Image 1: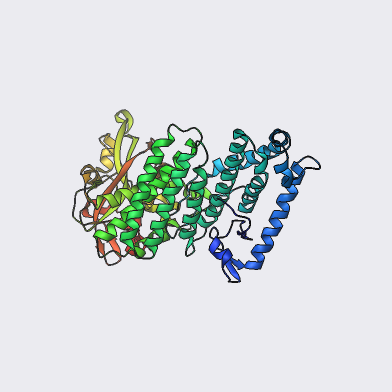
Image 2: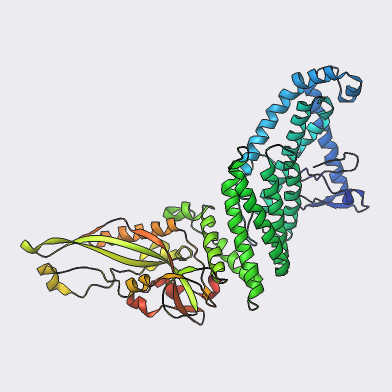
Length: 516
């Protein structure tokens, strides 16, 4: 970020240089293009003067006694080189190392959010004003860098500290669901990309933040209702992010960005899919769809107890974005694992295989029986506190309906099962990859690990009641989508569920679900 000290004021809130047009304007107020804060011009001027005073003090402490930067033009290059290497560089290296480490930690995190959502997990260890101030210190000592290596050190450190400051400001914007934040993020990503472009080995970071600037531009247009315009930016950003992902495998300096870029690709695929769906389905309201997503991703999940850690881990959204993208793709020719049956809406369930054994018979006819059962768990159970406290509310409780073999079978040892999955088994067996067609799809909102936790609790609770049961670890095999019928604001379970329809289904409301 090039800075002209004669023309540029500094934001008193974040330390960023203000736009030239604002600086040259006659208005008594100026607005920071990095953090978006409006302030009085006199306050920005006062902050600049304060900042430059601190910078001069730092420079004077770094230089040997009696020498001033203003004298550098009259000092030969050898003397300047020695002053830089012996007095200035050690001080620069100490502070620069701290900022570089913090920056590398920061860029390992996802720096994109779906509209209406926030991400409060990013907590930089520095304030943006600190990093901007360090960049200004480097600009002041630049005349002392007379050889190529010294100039490279100063330039790289300056660019990296400025980029770090800009990304710190974006971390704050990720935490605030306010109007215009995407435009500010575009400014910061674009400027940071320019800075990274001048640092050897950081070219993938440059392309990543150029891509995120594209995606954020698309988000701003989507929020304004320009769906067609947003789609082009999402597609361009997605293509760039995929190229970045491919280039990271061979880059040791910024390879740490790989998990973050992977999640940003999934988020962008969701955004592109939503925009594409709206364009090809004139009945869909993009703002309504995004508002629904907002309700789910800002849901007040438990923060303690058995579910606190899982549900408050932002990494879970990485998986959910993937499911959402698959649902959107299925409306446009892609496939999901869909069960047989008619219905106008596809509801996701976790397909779980449960094995158990029990003792049957009496006296010499007593023996063990091994049983394999299938059950389904509603894939949006995480939004229902009743399901989290009582897992039987979320699953097809196969032990709630007893096998009809009766007491005599238990005595003679001919009993083959103490559970009954009714029509669940055939329903699960009927699931095959297929397109959704015109049917609406409920998006899964739980992860596979969360489904495993749910069924583990279900097994533990069941074993405590059914004393003769010996239950093994259940296997969550994946998602299947069951065709159901909508009923006003609710959803009716298909006949295949029989008496085993999860209680969660009775509480499903179309207005509260994420539906593609």
